[in-house]
Length: 338
Image (tube, rainbow, N blue to C red; front, side, top):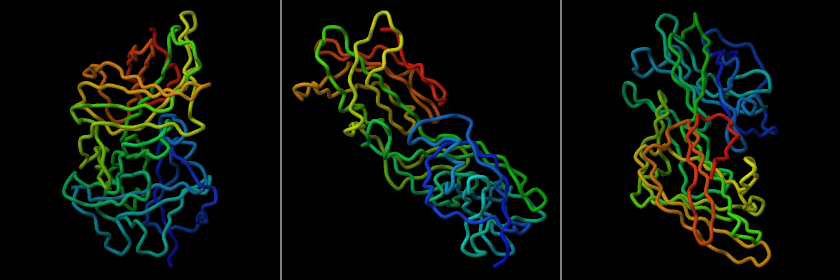
């Protein structure tokens, strides 16, 4: 097999990695193969959410896909593919290809536009101009308090003008999903030690979005084919069950029960309710609290945004006391006045 050639990308993103995955050794690359120099992301994240540091770990992979500059489907003239996978060895990004047919070979005269996506296991599909997408998107309605089951899907806007004379590119990967964080407090009327064990997001209008085997547009990360859902259910694992603390009137930084999830953008959501399940620490007795319907018109979440929701348990009531939308940085000040 001929020596590989690669494309150079600066990709900005987040992810997890298996250090036991074997990685290809750097080899001499053909001059007509895309090069990936570095991969990263312009925002931090936590746990299951992808980060720049995650991507730089051994074994992490990204996918790349090329179309012609006029948005028609690209077919390399001298063999190879319009799609390739690149894997990090801890310092460099090397093409992962069992043979020449898996190399993304570039044109010499014309140019192509190259997109990147994560995870690399998604399958690129050409549909029509400006409509290329990746398939295999799964948006869940059941998860734990740390979004452990939901993949953090990422995309990068296409880099144009790529060919053998300019075989490298810089990408900024972006989140296709949104992050929702819940912080749950209690007031002084609830004196017993109580833990948060489950949280349900409820939309009676079925405007929450989910589905399996769906699509994401490569050009802008838009999710396609999802269907309306009435609920998203979050259940704490044994080590995620957390005590609900009393919200102090004098302290702005009370550490309390927190849950977060990754959801598809839901621009049409109008009203949501939140149902919380608590467990008394000493007796194991469960209790369910349901908030009022909360107006979401000015707090609808879009791709790459972080919605923070504060809820207080008071007597037999659960009250939403704070809503705020941020860009998806690793935002830590999640406390709101009550």
